[in-house]
Length: 358
Image (cartoon, helix red, strand yellow):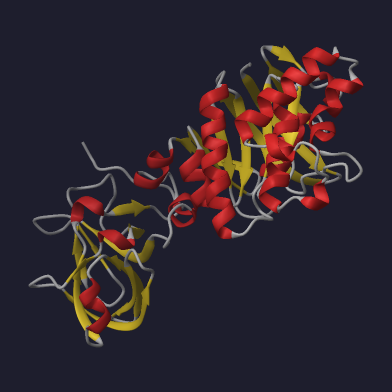
């Protein structure tokens, strides 16, 4: 396996810029997930690493060697596509071994590689079947098996689970994570599903508008989002975001909402009083029924099985709370809430995270 270095990579389609100077270092054996909404540039970045797209400027290195001018077949990478891309006239074993047969590898090596990959993916009983006789999950396993037999320097996954139903996606996520643990393979995985990103990644790369917004462990992005995009994109239900004004005139700093409601903060921030800010709080951190809480109207109750999502209105401001308390299913149209200061996030007018003053 090998490290991958992406150095100030830009990609334009004609006069339209798609990637705006991406810098990223992926360590040997690391599992990186590129996540973001459609059109954010994550698949384009993956395709530049694969050699399927030429970069407009910048440099890509695999294992320390510059690969900008190398054809995809010469980069020693394996790609798993959303569409599986299996040959319908070949059986599973033939699909998995195709790249090795093209390279005229020894029959013994081909048989060993196919057998090992099939064992890891539970495909031994299916080796003689053709793709039309396989389920979606089985086809995706074959696509991964075809990549494994090549023993490449890196694996690239382009939204491989998008065509599967919810239960199969859960199963395949676990299989991909187990496979990475067993192989120790350098991997880049593209998805728009933040749950996949959180559960699979060693590090998550959040992208928006062709720009890397934040890089870190899944919990780093969840607990300390760098900006409003990451705060709103990572997490389900999404973080509550409330516009307000920073106020440091009292005994303790706070945020004043448009209706005059003041919410206390855990300490002073590096801001001047009167600065417009955005206050963020995760739904699971909204405390219900405190003694002296804010009155809130319950507009919708959504039981999820594990917990309950409450859609609230606080002085006409929409808010979502998540609770494990099933008595909320029978609660009335009103409740009271509080925002624990230690769970609040603050963002400035440009949308960037504000840190507390020293």
